[in-house]
View 1 (cartoon, rainbow, N blue to C red):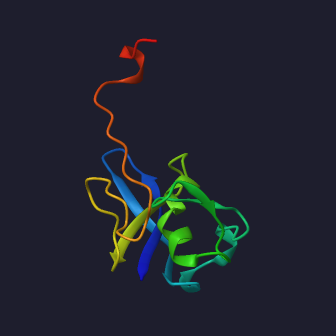
View 2: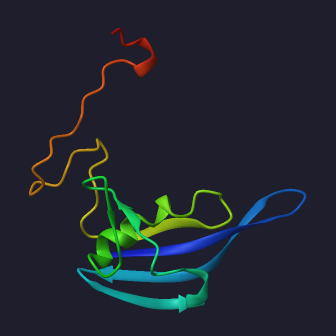
Length: 115
C-alpha cells in the first residue's frame, strides 16, 4: 500500500508553504481518491514503474503507478510526497526481490567512458 499527497508551492516574500491538493492511496490494483479534486490528475497518463523502469498505467498496476507519479509531475508546480509506503523501494536502488533484473553498478560518469 502507498499513500501520497499532491502538493503545490505557495510563495510569499519570506518563505514557501505547501498546499495539499489531493491525497491518493493504492493497494495492488485498487486506487482510492481520499481527498481533493480528481480533475487535477489524468488517470490515463502512464507513469514510470520505479521497480523495473517500464511504463505502467493505473489499470495495469495502481500501486506501481502511484509510486511513479513523481515521473509525471516534473515542473514543480505539483509535487508528490509519499506519506506511507508499506513496500518502499530500497534507498540503495536495489530491485524488489521478485524482480529478475539486477541493479546497475555505474562506477564512473558516462562522459569518462572510452570507446
